[in-house]
Amino acid sequence: MINFEEELKKFHPSLEVEDAEEAIYNQDMTDMADLMVKVLKESKTVKE
Image (cartoon, rainbow, N blue to C red; front, side, top):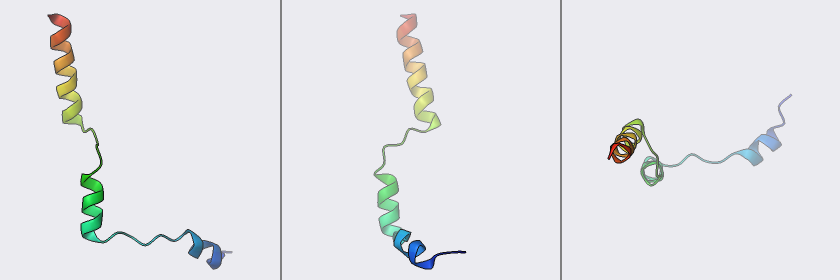
């Protein structure tokens, strides 16, 4: 059975849209394009 008191203690309100957008953009996340650029740069330096 669900203990509502315990569940309420775990609750965290969601961010507003502007706050969520800022939190997402402020994270330094590497995407696939960043990884490909890094690999290409490293492969060029190894060949030289």
